[in-house]
Length: 508
Ligand code: GLC
Image (cartoon, rainbow, N blue to C red; front, top):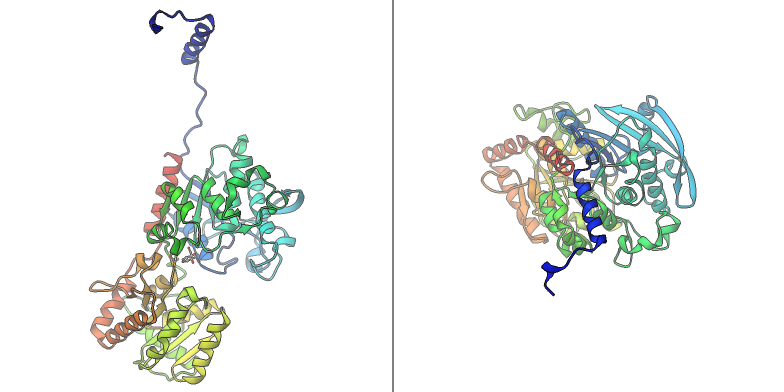
């Protein structure tokens, strides 16, 4: 049939007329574009209130840096754990309390507010969930963080901060973007909020049996397929799928996450959502990690006048009962004692390292195999080795300052902060070229450290040998220390990258 000769039916005429009318009808008002990003940063730990690792450092230092620029505003929300110090609590402002659904349960949630270093912190209170000795590692962590994330969303209207971005971190807070898209984005007071998840370490994913979906997370079983990865509910996968943007803590790690060696089973998910993934290397808090004023140090110094540095070495040697010698190279290490932190290859390299004229001081706790190995080594080499099997933030600063060389041979390292803290204190890192270590440490003419390019004891022993050789050449060594101390390790550049990302996601 020739189409041109077909007459329009009455129905088609009517539709056309409505369409024409719609064209001329006044358009619905679009919401005004926000003037700047307002980011509610959701973190399961925040230094100095609660901290077990690098996340706590980032959650305290990134918001301070971003707020300092005036280009975006960040506020932080975190659980009120038992460990939050009284010296802060006494100045907390109580805002309100409500009841929050945790599937079929209804739980008390109190909201407190406290401004610290120019950043508003909101604390969510529930003693049943958070008044415990540790932050994590309990049988009911799934329920505790289902409560926390639900409470963040339920309490948002009571906060004197109206975010246009919810920025969450790791699996503990992964339910925020999921709940937001399932239950909240349709309500007027929650409209037009973007979501970002940052992966600090993909090893921890929040994997739970499908039975928890309705009973603990309060999500219909029909959604199982949107949260399932590898045969169970995987909260980090859910956050990757549901969030508008995914970031991780270095450029190299963003690439590594696409591979099975580093992605702990999530590589296919990462590849599927690769177009929303960005890697931004962390900075460190250069005000807290400042050798010219950190209270934990024995003596202060800076890049221009480093005379105080050796005083730290001599004082630490005295404190630990090691021979007090300024000339001996001291290798320090602050680490969780786990194989993937490089402890396995270090153990293999250790006999060669201590056959040299060195001192080695280790601080950390972890797998009994390594706690035992290094304690035994201390007993057999009392003039060279100290194994401090404990978690001690003040001692870790002393080790950063007292060392000449800092050991960090991780198998996988999303960003790593220790190598940066060491450089800031003029202590030269030996690292592997992975993740953020690869993005912050270079070896060679203009280098700031040493690199073991293979994950083997031989490669690590060889890198250590190169470091010790250079240590003997004072002129070269001082130039190396100079470069390390003059690196910009602050949030200046990376903070701007986050601001650019926030703006991009808001379309401003
Ligand atoms: C995790 C990562 C570490 C990173 C830190 C902060 O602890 O293992 O590499 O520096 O998070 O992002």
